[in-house]
Image (cartoon, rainbow, N blue to C red):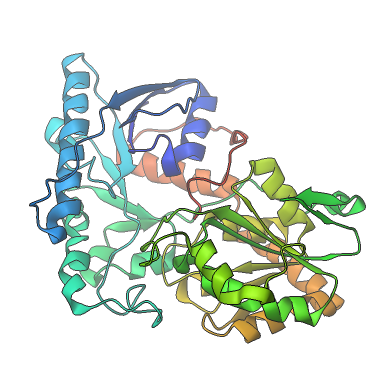
Length: 427
C-alpha cells in the first residue's frame, strides 16, 4: 500500500505507526514535513522550507491561520510535485494542527484522508480561565476562537478524523464528534515496565545521589510551565521536604514554553518559582536535570516512589501513559484529562490542582502506606496492559486504514522505538 504522511515535525505522533508499517516491508511510505535530522529507514522524506511568519500588520487573531495557510501552500506544492512524478497514495494520514493537510485534498480529491484532530479551543470552560492565577482577558477571546479556523476547515475536507482520548473528542462541538475516530494511543509495554533492579544501586542525577534508602518523588514535563502544574509542584516542595528527611525530588523538563505564555516579567518559570519559594527549596534534595536521554528517564521513573502528574484540562502527556505502564504510584491532578486515565484509589490518587499541601500530603501517603503503594502500582500496570497496549493500538489503526481504503494490511508486530530525549510529545 502507498502511504503519504504529513506532519511538520517528522515523524510526530506517527512514529509508532510508521515503524509498524516499515516492518511489514510491503509498503511505499512517503512523509511530507518541514526538514529535520530525524531518519526512519524505509521512509522517503519530502521536506519543505519553513514558511515565513505572518507580517507584523496581520491581526493577532489571524496570525495562526496565516501561518497555517502558508504551510498548506508549502505542503500542497510538495504533494503536487509528487503527483507530477506519478505518485498516487492509497491514503493520506497527517496532523491538522499546523494546516499542512488543507490543500492536499485539492491534489488528490478522492484519496481517503485521515487527519489528527487534537484539541478544540474555547475561550472559557476548558484550559483558558482554568487557573485563576493566570487570567485571560476578554480581549484575547477572538484570538482563542480563531485558533479553531484550521479545525473547521479540516472538518469540511470530506475526510475522517482521529483523536487519542474521549475527553479530547468531547472538546469538539457535538456536530463534529461523529467525524472523529477514537484511536486510544498505546505505549510499548516491553520497554515501559517495572524494573525492581534499579533500586539495587544508588542513582545519580543532576548532581544529586539517590540512595537506596531515599524516597524519590518524580515530576516530568516537556517544559516546566503552568499548563503542566509546575508552580503547584514547586509550592508543594517545602511541604514535602518538611514531611520526611529522606525525601528527594527529581523534576525532569526544559525551561522553554510548550503551552501558554512565558513569565510576563521575563526569565523562566523555574527561576520565578525558585525566587518565590526561597529557603523552602533545598537544592541538595531537589534537582532539575533538564531534558534527559530516554533510558535515563525510564530509570528515574522505575525508581520513583511517588510520581506526580499535573495538567490543565488539555492534552494528556505521553509521560502519564508511560508512568502507568511502568507501574508508578501516581498522584495526578483532579482534572478531566487525568480522570480519563486514573480512578482515585484504584490505579492512582487524585488531588486538587490548586492545593499544594494536599498534593504533598497525597505523595507522602503513597510513601508511608506501603500496601497502598503496592496496590496502586500493580493496578497502574494492569490498567496499562488492558488499555495502553501498543499492539492493540496498532491493530486498531490497521483496522481503520483497512475500512477507509478497502485494502488489507499484512500482519506485523510493532517495532521497538529508538531512544529519544524528552523533547517532543508527550508534554
